[in-house]
Length: 171
Image (tube, rainbow, N blue to C red; front, side, top):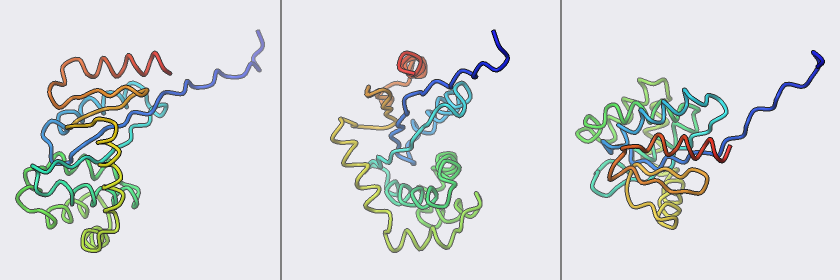
């Protein structure tokens, strides 16, 4: 065996789609699973936040639009996690609370405010919602891994293990 043998290439894992309502308490709980997945698989794993604001949460759609702007500014996950951590505050304060959270995580808060006013990310959110409905997303959190939809809205028991199994079998 030679020391010049090429290093094994990293395993390509399927992408994990995390269908989320940023004002959903179950999605806040699901963040623990997302964090555990990132810790376990590191940079080999891509977790994509997909917007699925539920009508029962008054400010969920603006939260999704603000998150889209946060992703444009390069801090989408940080913003999404901050909103989920402070969802009661957003429910009470609406756009004002979203802009405050944006500033707290280092975003250009004025630009987030402007994005909420001009609606520049409405099509992004609408496209996610339409795609979610087309593939059978009914509630949040829902994951899509290796083409399999996993609904965590009813119960998250055993969901992390199922996701890990799908990633390991399909990676």
